Image (cartoon, rainbow, N blue to C red):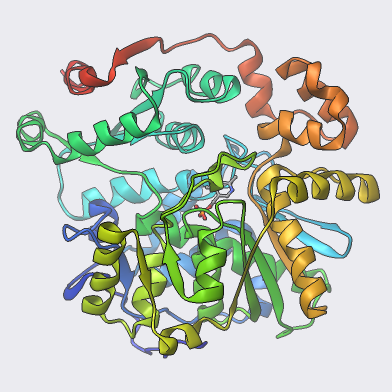
Length: 502
Ligand SMILES: *Cc1c(COP(=O)(O)O)cnc(C)c1O
């Protein structure tokens, strides 16, 4: 599908549930979610104004500028360049930022070289800078307070992104007994005077519900305003997280071209391990900017809502929630899908709002045949727990390359796709986490004998096996002192926030 392209250069944003109000990028970033509950979408997808050949001569930061300037049209050159420079620096362990590794003739786009060794760093390293720049541009004088509930990964990536960023504070709530020991250690050792990490007695839903209540608390908002503070959210529905993700799809195509792996204009497939649908939507945007992408392959784990959606046209969250070894994809409501639904509904906010009402009331909706016909660029499938583990072992045994559980879901789905279609198009697989982040599942997939080893012992074993140095993010937490030990009841979240902000 090719989206009609507007030649005007300015991009405005409106809600997927009410398109009457148009705002600029900086306002959309500052606001996060629209007041009507919708997500902000660009009024058109801009076309790249540099050729892929020209882009192939550029480094990551330059490509980032060329892509982001087309979406964030109210940012000046200086503002945007400054945000990019501050984001993609030595926090990443390679200057390339997002390297490609070839295994079995397929290209793994490694998006895990940032501070927390998972792909959320790609966007969360720049979001804080986009946010404070947006605040300045809109004369919002208040200090930004980021409130986040986390089941593990997002919390640490948001902490790492916002820690030490002037004009911001970040408060993260996590379920005290509901995250992995490594994830907890990563968070409670977080440095930075503006970072607060709090364990709660309760599960992730309690933390999430508590945070939502704080956002909706008018009395707290008034009190904050008097103290020169305002809440904001760092979750993946912010357009300031989506736009930076478009960059690496453009960049990876340009790099394949530079290295002579593909010819100029040759189409490639992209495979994305999907949860909230943000990452694959970014690939779809890249395609519509002019990157020659054929199929967008959407890979799910056993929570296969999206696979069912692409096969039947019905989205149905009424099902058992499965805990898998790829927890960042354990999701039954893929929030960012709403942006695609809006588009295939013909940018019809009213129609989209009806689907979303049905989703919240009945847990499901079914799109029309006309809409379904516009999804032909997408292919959906899923991998079971066994298939995921088998893929890790098989790829390791054949090539020596070790991938994490999320990437393995994508890789396993890609194998199914090839078998089903015989399509030999060159392919990029988004590799969303370092295997060191999910060491136990990865090592167990390779050999069950590792099951009895301790967490850090396994880390050293993986390093030997994969012939990869232990990433700094893991090395650091071995010995780092615990800096956050606040634990509160789920009923005390408001009081805790008030105490922090005093
Ligand atoms: C968040 C995450 C995903 C899912 O990405 P979405 O943009 O939510 O679809 C996949 N893999 C890892 C490791 C993640 O952290």
